[in-house]
Image 1 (spheres, helix red, strand yellow):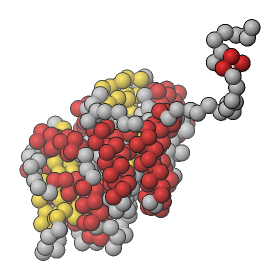
Image 2 (cartoon, rainbow, N blue to C red):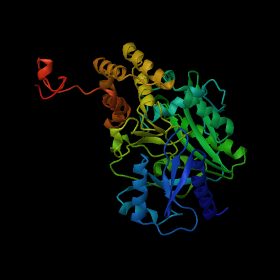
Image 3 (spheres, helix red, strand yellow):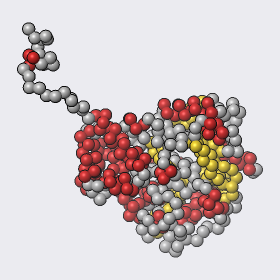
Image 4 (cartoon, rainbow, N blue to C red):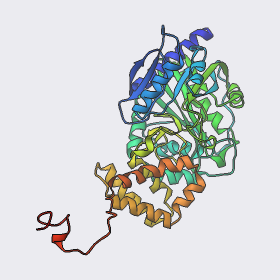
Length: 435
């Protein structure tokens, strides 16, 4: 198969993969994927096949629609398939990120791992599923290759606060074969994890993450190899991934991947401060993208409405959520507060009560949420979160709670109380003006 044919198949995959959970809106030469099921927001991209030229006005029109739908203003495409998109995106005020796109040639032998570590595909009923799911949530709170930081205790903290509904979605995708999850596990459970998404003979490896204190042992490479081998064994004709940068691409080259093109991402330059941004869903070496992307996205104007700020990826409950395309609504925010307050039982009890009511489809009294914020502030939970996360990430977690309080809390009258007789008070008199 020629490089051109491979790129064409990958381009088709990128158009088909979101349609499992989204509908298409055709907007001139571009298409926008609008979620129709619970989950995460998708991107816009150039239309397949014949289309009108891509222009800045066309990009602006899609951005306006994304803002209307409260979706992130995100565009993804392959440079070789739409070479005119980058200029149009830049002219429309977007920042364009290029990333090496690699496809698997001949898979190299499996890399060596420590003797106490086993690498395997995770089954839907695997007892380590939730722990494997949680690994990237921790891993991508601490990006880069640094080691010696959080590990299994942080993973288990996330597991303790996980949303069973999210795991049900993960299990369903694993059973269907649309997603496959692999892990490298030691005596204390999963230390690294990643997945691939599969559509019509094309497998995309995404979200390979390693706990910070287990890095520099080849576990990420081992997970990537296991995923690639599994995809080939089921008959995948193309296995591909997109690396964060050329350094990461060299690591994947050792496994048999070769660069074939450039994956492009465009987004507003103000989307997030640099320290909060992780490469998006297509970057291998991110968070676990079983149901989406892996980084925080700010939706313009969303801070004025509950649930307006969105998280891109599967990071619904991941600490340091610079990850996963899931809408951060009030329920998600209370779940995050529950996870972050594990060491403060009083705060955790309030967060748990609020979350359970929301999970049962009930409304939560604003006074309970007010108490949650007050207790979290008094016990130092908010201070610890601000020290741990970027301002944008903290805003995404706390914002939906504050917005709900602001929406529901009665506004007290600022009128000075006057001890007047009823008949001389225009608001209480039985008739006016007085006789």
